[in-house]
Image (cartoon, rainbow, N blue to C red; front, side, top):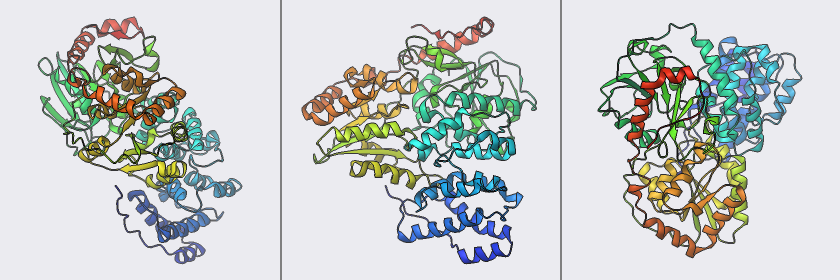
Amino acid sequence: MTQPNPAAPTFNAEVTFDLFRAGKFDDVCEHFDKVLLFLHANTIYTLDDSGLHFINVFLKTFFYVLSQPGFVIPDHRVERFLQYNRVISNVTAMSSFKTTDAYIAILSKQQVNFVPLLILWSARNTIKPDRKAIFDMSPHLSSIWYLEYGSLFYSGLISETVVNNLREHFEFSHPGLVLVANIQEVYFGSTYVDGKCDRPIKTHLNAALTNTLKGLPPARNRPKKNKIAVFSGYWRAGHSVYRNYYHYLKTLRPTYHLTFYKLIPGADCDETLFDDVQSYDLQRNGVPGPASLQDNDYEMVIFPDVGMYTESILLANRRLAPIQICWPGHSVSTFGSQMDYFISGKDVELAENPERNYSERLVLVPGMGVIHNKPTYELTNKRMPADRIRINCPWYAQKVNHNMLQTMKKIVVGTEKKIVFRLFIEHSLSRQNDFLPFVTEIKKEMGDNLEVVNGLRYQLYMEQLEQGDLSIDSIHFGGCNTISDSLFLRTPTISWEGEKWYNRIGPQMLRLVGMQECIATSEEEYIKLVLRMINDDAYRADVRQRLEKVDLDSTIYSTADAPYFLHAVDYLIENHAKLQKKGERTAITIQR
């Protein structure tokens, strides 16, 4: 879905140069800020000659002025301009400049260059920053830059340069790192780089956050039996968090008193399972939270989706109740927060030493660790013309990393059939002009073999997905609800199994429906399976026919394992003190 471009503000380079020559630097910054704010808040979806000219003229002026030794950004504007780092990188990628490398090289030779360097230095640059030297100059300003630099994962991971830079970035830590507003971008985004570098940076961020919060008054907790609080910003029908955990939470309803904390102000949430509903507004309440949380009587708190927004990260690093647990709503460990237990599924996690992927004590319940809500979509059974093979890739943009892109290119080379990968990115590129840099780069690599589908509502998304001939899963961060959607549509699906819950849940769902043959464990095997599904029409039709005979209600959408979450909660409440004293790391298994 192509969306219209917003109307750009006016920008006069000559007026800006006149102000610069007159030494009116604050007025110069005001001119720049007007355009940068627009580009930060509005996404450009197509770029014609006039649009490219506007961007080139603006950047040419901006880069020239910023690289002049005598130009100084007034102190009251510095932080704001640092927060434009990501959008500057994205817009530069859209322009004829492509990167700011030339200006990084110029500024590196100047004596007074610190702030301009941080404004222009992003993960797209081939010149490596000396992060320690940068932090030693100003920990506060460097922290703003650090988090902005790390947020390029949305649009940049298809580039090998960006992947390598972000890996180095997240493996670096500095005692001077202080936490500012967009901690969520790095906490969430580091998981998508390589599946490894998220552990060190999240460990460091949690430690820094704990140090920041230690000056606050601790929550006063006087636990009452059977009182539990649930914290979420996405507890609404249709969202993956709700789709996966509704039936688990429902099992607590008869036994426990549930209080719901709505963590995103104004969000439309389903409150039907809760005895009490509270709102948590970070801007209004601050980190300690409302009085009902600061002085509470909860025996346990549950976080379905730590890491998906700032409020969840802040609260997960506070001791609010004796027992604190999280789910794979964002399906990776917090690596060092105040969470005591991580609830997952025995059938999905590694058979040997699954706890190695978690800082929390792992609790394994029977089944997958999720109970899928069945989609409400009505199948149309409409088929598209057989002029090409349509391959569903229902992945947010951050799942399309450089290695995945190379694998897709090998699939193209391996078939003589006309194929098109249909990449359903939804709204993952709707901020800070992430969209065009990503789409331009991936189309350059894939050409007519790729179609980017953007921003569909669920009904239309499912209609488009139903028209696909097959679906393929991403690696290293695989799909969960997207695999559920594909199997619900009886679409032949190929998955690639790894060693984390997020790249093992899809394969387990395929096993449940008798499709073990569609699970790969290496790139070679993955390509082979996808090519067979593309090239062998009879086989693909046979797989679809077998899927149409599967009873999904007793497999993918079965709620039979839901009560084991209640058993896990009962067990943890009864045995928490003993479990803490033992200090063991071995996973706790709840038996059927």
